Length: 113
Image (tube, one colour):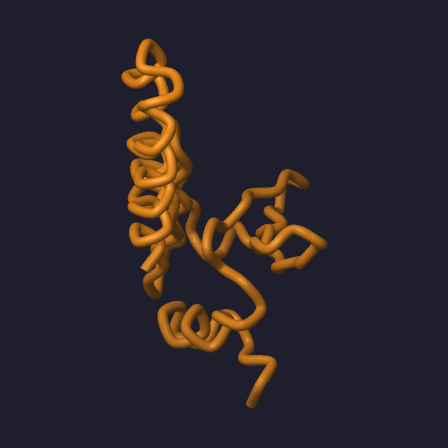
């Protein structure tokens, strides 16, 4: 669904081609970057590990290293690690915690149960 928004962004930028024809190639890079970010940003969890992918990096941590999750005003959860650092979990929100509970094998409690 997010790629539909990128398509409409592309259409909006295509309308600007007539105004600034010399900036066409630069403007059309923006939807490509946004689409790449949509594909790249994700959190993958299984019974043993949780992996967080950002645009340029990826980090995998075993569940035993995670003390807990916290939610700030930003939309994504942050995993607090035993060494005191934090790891952002892209696309994990309070509403998606039941999915994370199922994927983690119950290591993350379901707040809705």
